Amino acid sequence: VTRLVLVLGDQLSTGLSALCSADKDSDVVVMAEVMEEATYVRHHAKKIAFIFSAMRHFAQALEDDGWTVAYSRLDDDDAHKTIASALLGAAERYGADKVIATRPGEWRLIEMLEDLPLDAKVLEDDRFIATEAEFADWAAGRKELRMEWFYREMRRKTGLLMDGDDPEGGKWNYDHDNRKAPPEAVDASGPMSFTPDEITEEVLTLVEERFPDTFGHLRPFDFAVEQGQARRALSHFIKTALPDFGDYQDAMLRGERYLYHSVLSLYMNTGLLDPIEVAKAAEDAYRSGDVPLNAAEGFIRQIIGWRDYMRHLWYHQGPGYERKNGLNHQRKLPEFFWTAETDMACIRDTVEQTIETAYAHHIQRLMVTGNFFLLAGIDPAEVYDWYLSAYIDAFGWVMAGNVIGMSQFADGGIVASKPYVSSANYIDKMSDYCGDCAYSAKTKTGEGACPFNLLYWAFLDRQRDRFKGNPRMAQMYATWDRMKDDKRETILKEAGAFLERMSKGERV
Ligand code: FAD
Ligand code: DLZ
Image 1 (cartoon, protein in one colour):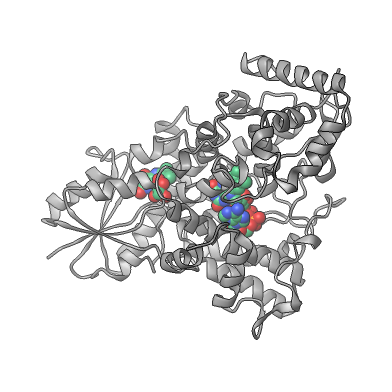
Image 2 (cartoon, helix red, strand yellow):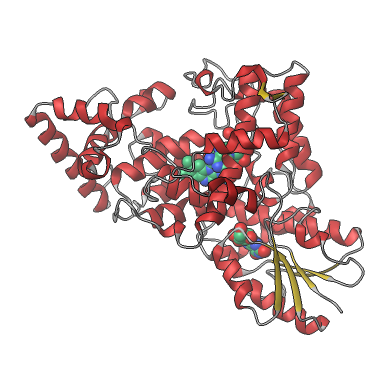
């Protein structure tokens, strides 16, 4: 009896659990480009094109390997609008009533499979380091789910950077070596570029025609779209950028959009690269003396630590986590996050880069845009939808912990022990944005004062009841409380006026 094997646009791995438990000779793989997935947020044009092109390449590879693939294209005359409709259509065509699926990375699709009038067997997505059961065991009975402890378990489990039972070099974490200010010059050339082939060109034309008003620039498009290319992009990163990844992980430079970052998240998140393969490549480079320990450890921690932790936290927390609003922030997302039309140079540059490339690195996401959203009290649901639209690597499972937890503290402190907020000082130290800004990072109030300086104190003041007992914030509150009354009043008044102008749509 024929069964259907669902492969979603971010499940493009030959080792996918659904494929591994299916029978190539009798089962049919279902893949579908559908409007619902392409429009449930205003996805970046590059993201739609990347997913469609990678799906088409993967379907081709499966067919070459002997699978039957029922592939529904967005421009087919009888195109399906939803994944459910594609499954039901294939069930009728092939006389199938069973579906094998790998757990989708968003609750709405998990729920769709539960509601489907077919017998759907949903398998764990085992493309992560820990299993769901291991994470649940680890989390059981813990008051705080801190990533660092999870990460150490994953080092032990994988044996990566281990020296017997001890961490390589004697320490688990070399983060204190990884916060250098921006370098004078960057000697890495950025991620590897790929010329679009015929399949990708066809998809680019489709996206131009069908999604003329979606967010972001479609061209130039130079991403890898299949596993072989993604592996070349990985080798290129290990050789050209990983040695300096650690030192300058937190730095931001105008005109240097990638610095020493890997730009590999999109490939891991869609299945073109296996995270263990990526982490092992970094370890090999360290063992052969090409990469210092702080760089290899820092990079491996992001993958087997942060990335895996975010996946499991999302599943462990269950549906509803992504709509938490623990700080009760209600302000609407300002229009300049779609247009980059703002006088704040750091936000303008980060949003411009996002529009053009669908990429920003971690500190831009956390300490520029995320910091601003949090300080300004933007509704976290709108913030979540913005990140999900804006970045090529964004899927529900990875957004939840990063946006709702780490960046917006909307989960009440499950991911972060204190909110990631800073005044202009941090951005000035870690970037070259402030030198070319209409506002002054050094000015605290009055003409030209950087909005981050005003909003920082206004946030602490507004959320005093929530954070006053947090020992990690005691010094911030002590500084605020030491200020003269009239200075505090001026800051709060100017912060309020700024937010009012911003919410009216005036240029800020
Ligand atoms: P590198 O700096 O080269 O890091 C190496 C790899 O580590 C990444 O490719 C990624 O797979 C992994 N990684 C690092 N940090 C994290 C993290 N916090 N969570 C998960 N994986 C991590 N990451 C996404 O993959 N998709 C997202 O939609 C996403 N949204 C984010 C939103 C916010 C507000 C914040 C603060 C972080 C977000 N991240 C997201 C995490 C991180 O910013 C990106 O993984 C990283 O910037 C991707 O670029 P890169 O591949 O060059 O990463
Ligand atoms: C992001 C995306 C887009 C733009 N389009 C499709 C699609 O047409 N078909 C598909 O199977 N998947 C697509 N995806 C990825 C899904 O949205 C993704 O599987 C879920 O968000 C779960 O992570």
